[in-house]
Length: 231
Image 1 (cartoon, rainbow, N blue to C red):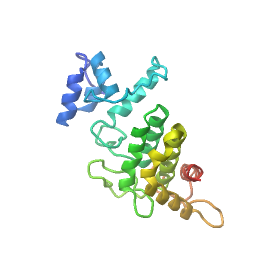
Image 2: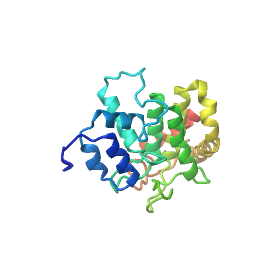
Image 3: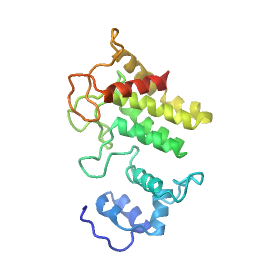
Image 4: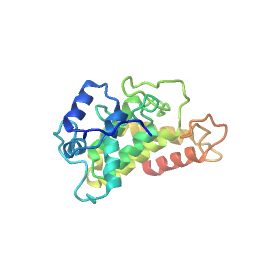
């Protein structure tokens, strides 16, 4: 489907070289069969010097779905401080809701610091009112277009922080204290968005990225999840 040719196994050296040059065709690169050294390279870090493996021994080492998902997350954040939705031009952006789910996933497999790092990046792009734009270019930290802001992102960010705290309760204070301003602004934004009569948030573009005239479940559920996590 992608048109990439299955040739010689992809080696660790090729991954490091391609990422260092910054001009690799990622679709072709990741379609090539992985050698054992390349698999270790992606699981342990592109420089081969990771402090902890990406596949924890407490998880089922034979779970191919888990291994594939972890490789996806590694590939989508290679040489970046935040995970992007995809490597093609259309998707090489960071959506706050996506980043929050990446943080939750990393926390669940034991990568608590990496999970907090994802939310720390969002702290730097958050608006003063606690809101977020629809998506951000990771290189400029600015939105790439004039899409309307999406309230659900704020809710998912707080939910993501809650997931980190739930997975690492003994480190929750350490991991989330640097995110205090992010969480305070986010919770304030969510509370201020609620209508006094209905206790519901306003209509907002959600994951469908359509300008909405009425409140959608995609927005209401995210706001609720955020408020519950921030309580």
